[in-house]
Length: 409
Length: 90
Image (tube, rainbow over all chains, first blue to last red; front, side, top):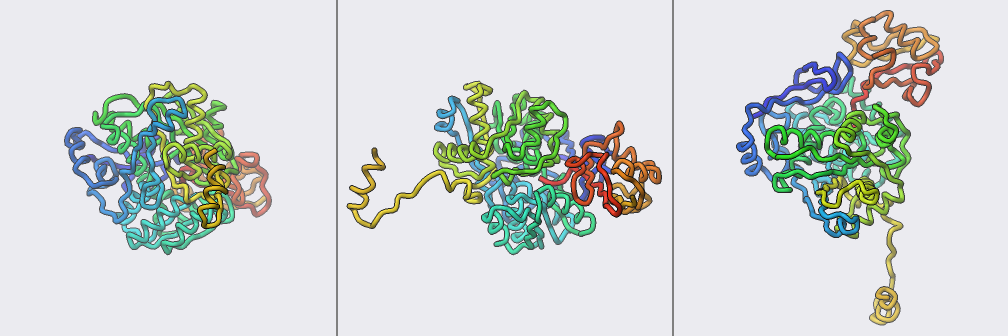
């Protein structure tokens, strides 16, 4: 059993385990800090393997004294060896972690499951979030399953599919006329006066812990070994940095042998504050006004940008960005070679993977894992132009003589 | 220029509990200096080497000052200057 507490990531000041997220001394972010010294690696491994078929199997590494029970358990999504994609890219070993296979079809189910379990433990009756879409789906669904009230704040110009897949759960859906960063500012202000658990504001230290489970699953599904390199999308930078945290916790504990993989971050040109700072050699990100089809990554003022920069530089990785056309090509490339239809964020990840391979950054012998964080059916506009339907009369002649010759030519 | 500086809950321990402070200033920097002159401890909480700490966001009437002229952003009479943590979201 591990013990844990809240500490400032910048100045290490300790805080009680409440709904709080900012250091009052230096304004830095609070994080969950664990003491794993009482945890035996072999026993931990056995517990994991005998655990539930989802993220609660890793509850020794999450901020709970007792393993939570929650009705919509995410996790243990497929890790698929993508040989046809690897062939196309001139690589030997590429794996796709398909996190669209979660209850609401994105990796956000992981962070929300952890945040809502903590919200219930702390006695909250209402949960809320600022979202670019996937988080909205997850908060609305998990709140419905747990019987909590919810408020979901999103930019009003979000994809229709993401609005529908939020509203259906009976949440209070609020469309804000502005960017995600405006929504985030509004929620930060609301958080001061409402007795609500904002999963990514006052519960953010707990919420972000859910992302580590993607690293744990990767190690377990690779037979308790590490990738050489990972490619992961960056919006706030929280998932990117918590993946490293997950790998490091298990390396430090001896649950897996090896070094932290090389970390490659993926952004869209139209919202690339972290990629720009990486390219320019800056220590901090300059905020941007997003203009991209990858709306789930459209955070112009990323909270964990500085840590994402440190991680990419510290592992000899990079943070790259791709154009909207490259994103559409990335969606098609992944679909045509793996049978996985991803949303625009996955198009960004696949396009950056392709860019790294073309640039020669990846040694062909490396084992690469790319994280596909969301579902293509949620961003249909991005796929509309990529194919055509052949319409015919319901006769053999119409198919055999009218169409088949053209299709098989 | 008379403006209102809004203090986030996490910093009210050094402003005697005050959440809104009326001060005079023609720029964001001047307005913050005026607040610091009343509550000196606030200065070290949110500034470092003469600039804002990296996890502090400042808005003038809802607009991030980094999209304007930073601490030199000009203020109009009645503007609201809002200080918020930069560690939320995503």
